[in-house]
Amino acid sequence: MYDFKIQAADTASMYRDLASALEGLVAGEPDPIANMANAAALIWETLPDLNWAGFYRNLDGELVLGPFQGRPACIRIAFGSGVCGVAAAARQVQRVEDVNAFPGHIACDSASASEIVVPIVRDGELIAVLDIDSPRTARFTEEDEAGCVKLGDILARVL
Ligand code: SME
Image 1 (cartoon, rainbow, N blue to C red):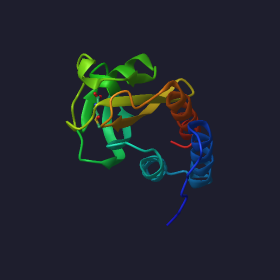
Image 2 (cartoon, protein in one colour):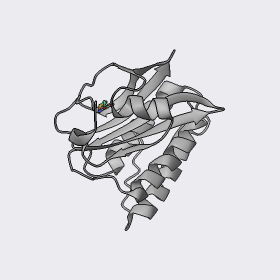
Image 3 (cartoon, rainbow, N blue to C red):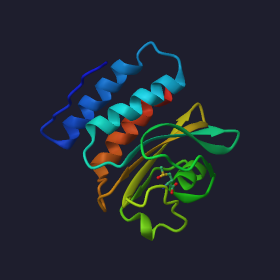
């Protein structure tokens, strides 16, 4: 068991600590599922106010549920559908302050109020998306987005 206990004074240093913990966890491990599983657990343990954190993998042009923490979720999402599918199709981060106002949002857990989805791209190929949900509206700020993009960059090398 790894006990990281990240308790940073501010959001930027929390993401710095989170990124270096993630670097340490994935270092030398080539298995993508193991790395996604530990990344989901680390994010879940570290970021406050979450109800879901995990991955959808790009399997032949369809998003398929990967390792996560939180309640059981929908298994397959088409590109272009919901927040994850839009992030995958556009290859752009989706930071949604109010999921109920997002056309086509897929409500896997009715507790979700806001969400951020980060595409993970390596050598021009979409590998997966990192999806993080919160029960608090507008939970994710620009600072969270920058921090999560950094996590996605680390993961792109090891998924
Ligand atoms: N809300 C997502 C679906 C995945 S769950 O949140 C885990 C979406 O709209 O794509």
